[in-house]
Length: 193
Image 1: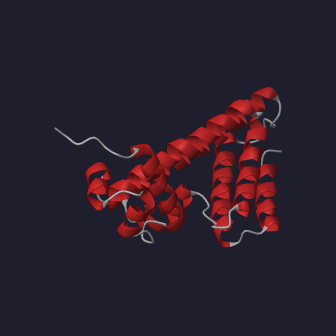
Image 2: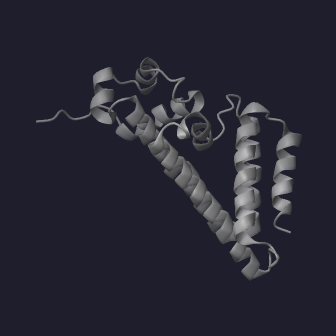
Image 3: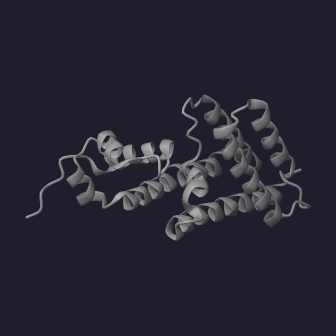
C-alpha cells in the first residue's frame, strides 16, 4: 500500500516553480529545491521525478497559471486594443516593481534551454504561438468593432507584437528602465493604428 503524501503536491510544485523562475534551471540545485519545497529528497524524486522532470512540470504549471490565465482574463475584461495595451503595460509595471528581476519564466527558459532541449523548446514555442494567436485574434476583433483599422495586417502585426513583447520581457530583467520599456510598448501599440 503506497504511503499518503504528507505535503501539498501543488503547493510544493509552486515553490519549485518560483525557484526555477528566479534562478533558472542551471542556477537551481537539487539541495536548493529540497530546502525551498520543504520535503526530503526521496519525496521529491518519488513525486516529481528528477530535476528536469520537476522543471518541466513547473514550466507547464507557469504556462497554465500565469500566461494562459492572464491572457484569457485580459481578453474577457478589455476591448481588443485595450487588452493588448494592458498586457504590455502590466509587464512594465510588474517588471519595475520586482526587485528580483524575475521577468517571465517562459522567456527566461527560451533563452536558457529552448535551443538545447527539444521538449522544453516545444513548450516555449507552443506558448509563443498561442500568444501570437491571442494578438491575431484581438486584432481581428478590433477590426470588426472598428477599434483597429482594417489596413492593419493581423498576421504580420501579431508577429511584430510577439517580438516586441519578448524583447520587453528580456529587457525587464537586464535593463528595467521605465523610459526604455515604455518606448517599446508605444512602438508596439503604434502598429495597431
